[in-house]
Image (cartoon, rainbow, N blue to C red; front, side):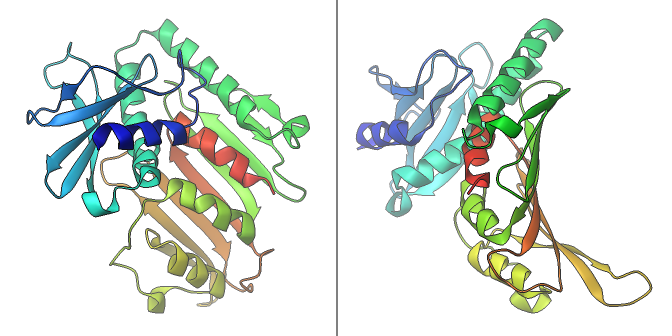
Length: 277
């Protein structure tokens, strides 16, 4: 079961542009820290384990390697009855791979970090769709481009080369297509629509339950809500999403939304094509 599931997951993970090879299932069996069996995926530099934590729960974990005292990195639990390959691949992109990259970057010298950052920037350029690549311009550690007419996007690699911040002014239709790439599965119990201002914000929160209201800004000199900001921040994990939108606009496909997200390189490269029509 684990091997079949892991094999399906490898087919969903994008080819890592900065790693030696595509994701493959290791032939040798392995075990987790609790001695339960696990399947291992590897791309030549990184390793991910999918194992049985309990009869009802799977664990998906990054593997730092045996050279460290505790080799298991970040992880997510997935109920067996919800363990679709798409959900596990999403957890790997959103949580596991950023943690593995951060762990590797922390142990590198300045030269290796420079190389990592340059490779990350090159990877972002390759992720821009062909129809938008003519507009792409590199500015320092940032890549700027026009995903579609009337929109703008910027992706900035951090100093260590292990995280990317994307900021894009987009339409509501594009944001709705992009959010499922970065937001986790499952409802969020802390947000009710009564506390959300504006039809666009209500539509986004109703469809993407990981979002919550972060703040509202009044129109200068009044007590009228002019702008609202929605967001999602993963606790102790390298992922954040923020959406800033004017309140007085209808929830039509052309409504304007500013998306900002900070995440790992693999997830960023999966997101960039979704920002274009």
